[in-house]
Length: 272
Image (tube, rainbow, N blue to C red):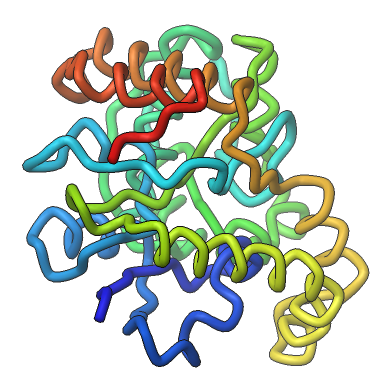
């Protein structure tokens, strides 16, 4: 039985629908950073992990082709909330649930926002984060629900900033597997989950709204318009650019073999 680690955020549900009921796999749901830790430790065989973790794994992971969580412009659920104009920000509290978005912000701080703040790790709670820093980076459901307007804050969407910087989509998470674990059967199950999940977006939005997550129509628009589930050629170009910039910034080690895997996917050739 394949052990799968998935993300519990709303934006991941169109990729995971039905997997928990599939008797051929075992699935657990965690925040992205924990999903990555489990994969690196070999406690799961395959995980929906932050893209930056492709450069941190103990092996060169197989990447499931075609599937991802990304955006092509504003994403709405990955944002920096600031108490002052961003040019004046000197400290940023970073959501400990995140890894790709943390590295993305640090790349954007250098190349787009032109700031060099101090950083502090913090649980994803906007009020306490802003007690210790000028700005707070939040991801996922906490970012969607953040009462930033009520608090008189500015919201800076990192998906929009990346698009402005590069003109490319951004990939937040991919299905990554230990070598040999992304079998044809497992990939077929993941593709089926994505088909079912994207068809069920209205239901997923309604369920989240009923649970107190906000307005159903707004959530459906978020899943349809802000989130991109395709790991196509443009997304792969964006992923390669991001990992290259993160390595150049010293946030991770450069690993040419990982970029070769991505190039192989761009050519329509997945690793066996």
